[in-house]
Length: 88
Image (cartoon, rainbow, N blue to C red; front, side, top):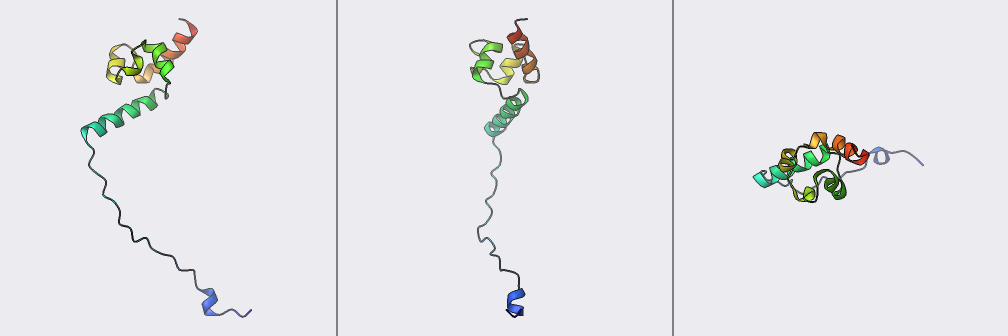
């Protein structure tokens, strides 16, 4: 087959005609939720059973601020969990 200019051209690509959606301004509820998710990740993504083990029956219903007042902030959660599991 003979190579021609037609065969050497790069394939055409389509440009997306969709416009980008504007990102809505974060609300106070959105900021609070983002902060809670950040603390949840910092604590090692604990399960509901682990919350109950460390904080008691109300552990899963508490906010991170309430959990910190109870004596175990998110950064110290894994250490407290190990201590509770080992029976110290």
